[in-house]
Amino acid sequence: VQLQASGGGLVQPGGSLRLSCAVSGQISSTYGMGWFRQPPGKDREFVAAIRYSDRGKYYADSLKGRFTISRDNAKNTVYLQMNSLKPEDTAVYFCALKIGRLILSSLKQANSYDYWGQGTLVTVSS
Image 1: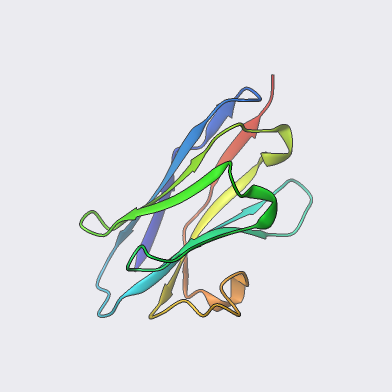
Image 2: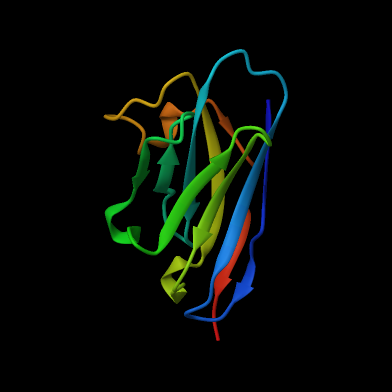
């Protein structure tokens, strides 16, 4: 299984970006997806997660209302729409995949995911 994240770049404060994460390879079950980010000099942190059915979406409290996670299972792709970006959103953004169902008590923990993408850099600066 491979995850390819894309869509990062330089954006001005207040701008928007949409990240994509394409999943390839054989997966014999449903899977949950998550986005994490790692700001410069800081630890990796949870951003958002989504169930395979698209009926469960979860966000870091500080990002609700600005970020939206979605997925297209036909394309094996997960998206992260980021609006009203702030300089503190600058980070490397990683997508992650968990085989099977997301567990509510652990979906914000990086070690609960089985596969990771390589990361895409988002820089918010004027």
